[in-house]
Amino acid sequence: MIYVLYACLAAILVAMGLVLVRLERGPANLDRAVALDVITSASVGILVILMALTGRIDLLPLLVVFTSVGFISSTTIARFSPAESITERHILTPEEAARTEVPEFQDTDAPVHPDADEIIGTQPAGGEGR
Amino acid sequence: MIEWLQVVGVAFIALGAFLTLVTAIGMHRLHSLFARMHASTKPQVLGVIVMCAGLACVMQKPRVSYTLLLVVIMQLVVAPISAHMLGRAVYRLKQLDPDVIVLDEYAEDLARAERHLREVGETEGVASGDPLPPPT
Image (cartoon, rainbow over the protein chains, first blue to last red):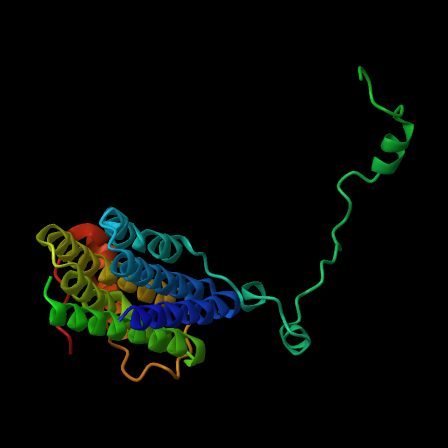
């Protein structure tokens, strides 16, 4: 029976690894929030298996805390996540970068202080009082 | 300690671990966010229930069983909150491929509310508390 429990532990660890891959890859932040939820419930599973293996009762409050608090992270992400454009979601592949065409910053306005260069040039180096 | 009950408990825990693994495969392979949310609900509700039942069968102590019941109730309260918030955020931020949705009742609802606001809201104010007209 103990070996079955060890196999379960291995299965959950593999599952957490797969979810971590999704957490790293997920195109939007909300995908990552969903993956975070799954990781929380997988760690609840790990706690359950540890308790069954060792017979420790003192892990029970941890279980309660995990289930009652684990939802806060994903809810917060969902509530406060801003609308993100496709260019901000993840590191773009070259094809995507070519397709989305981030506009380059162009300064076409007239300068506000045309004589700024002269003013900066005439100031003493290091400023005053320092 | 009843021996066969412990075997049943370990079988339950194995079922929960299997559900978690299935979820992870689903998270890895499914293509859209709603499909992944569908996969992610399995260990959150059924997996936690099954694993807590299994642990109660293995431990066979009343104190542990009551606390595990509390855990299950907590999970049942909490899981819909995060799922609702996530789904709402996905819809509102328009991070959704429109081809994914087969039936979009929320858009109809929003359109109906917009129409109602155009008819009533400008003269009487938005917060007049009038009930929305029935769906056509």
